[in-house]
Image (cartoon, rainbow, N blue to C red; front, side, top):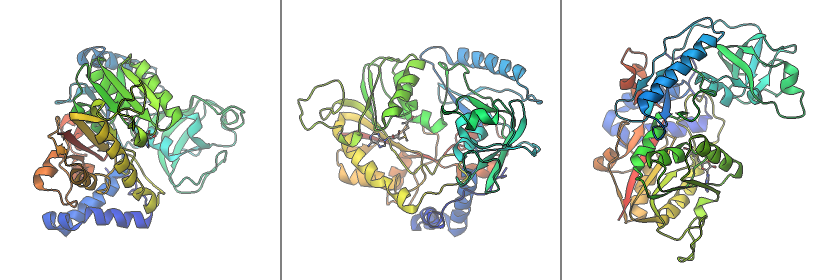
Length: 462
Ligand code: SAM
């Protein structure tokens, strides 16, 4: 059900996206009316969360059934201890095709009454609350002047980043995300020398109810969007191989790759941002994965000019890896929920050249006969199908490969790719099933469509 307005974008960005979704090839295939309807559904579904939570189970440590059982027990305990007035039925379902995925339905939007005491949080924090998180203190921007731990408050998400930190109220563009109980006084949030840590507001009546995974089986249950889990399987790493993950932080996919390999082999994880490398290492440690080696490095420069250069870390000689994952930095326009983006068109268009530089390095670092997977969490043609068309043109050694599993839609028309090529691509397009998300269709059937916007291409280097 739509309860939030469509994602708010700068007019120039809306116009750009409209031209993408109503491009000539699409119009010729489906007609103006259907193309417009898909575009409007896209803008609406982006501002709403998916109707389930996806958990990747650490099947390198225990069986899926064992993890499912333990998770059920933990979440039941959480429900019993919760101060929430209402209980909701707890379902944990295996995905019919993906062996390490568990799906938990989200209940919402629910009728929750707004209160007079308001806490305002940043948009990122608000989105996390809509996906089952509590409010962590650093995300709080405004609170009532005399807020004490134990006060019951309504939580609002600041859509346009206009609320000043430390304010006592905020009249700008905001949306209600649920009610909670403050765990801290106002002074411990705003009047401390150290940045505040921990839960600031414990959500008891969220608009969208799903279990909180904070501290729940951290080594066995990893929250990850369904298309991101698909990426690890499409890459298809095998025990003993050497894999490169070029843009790895915070390491969700890196850890999945190592887990699929049974932690046998080597997974090299690179990221340009130093403090993000710690997140990769923490995640690897938490999931008991030893085959991961993480380095802070600019992947566009990861190919050594000296072919004989043999060191453990980057740069690497050409043809060093059996498989390469390029989960590219991108405009992120597929994230859900995302109610507002203030990005300019220039910012959105700045990713294509960087992705191409990374692609050049990826192809050089891959062995002949090796597999390259390119993925993004965005919906533009320029960062997805156009990149595939460019790559096939630029690197005659690359051919597109079928993907397993292929649970998303095919590639989008508009980049001049053939129908056969489009069928080999995997595009997760939540707008295509937005009308059906309210139906009673069993969760495993609707889960494959009700995802974030995402794109995957798989190549073989000949
Ligand atoms: N693969 C990650 C996961 O599944 O957890 C998410 C990766 S995120 C889409 C993109 C990452 O690329 C960011 O962490 C960013 O710091 C990194 N990045 C951007 N430019 C880079 C570059 N030139 N070299 C290496 N990493 C880069």
